Length: 99
Image (cartoon, rainbow, N blue to C red; front, side, top):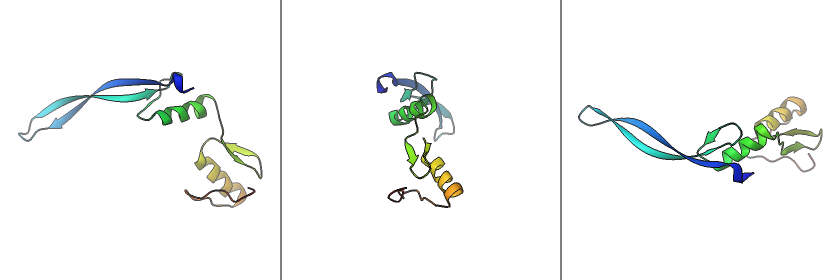
């Protein structure tokens, strides 16, 4: 799948204020990674890889063993645990053994 993530270089223009009160346009090149399916772009290849897995291939890597629910995003799993099971999972916490 990584072979289809394209690295693209775009030109950005930033306007800056100079000390004498005038403004100038600065040109710079910025490398971005692009989804080959929809054109989503990100500065990080990992973000595009995750985007493709979740949005286009509907991969759900997170599984709650007690009820079998699967999620692609950790915040969705945390919300399910709290609303359906009354269990609060913090940002750095992992699931208890056997859950």
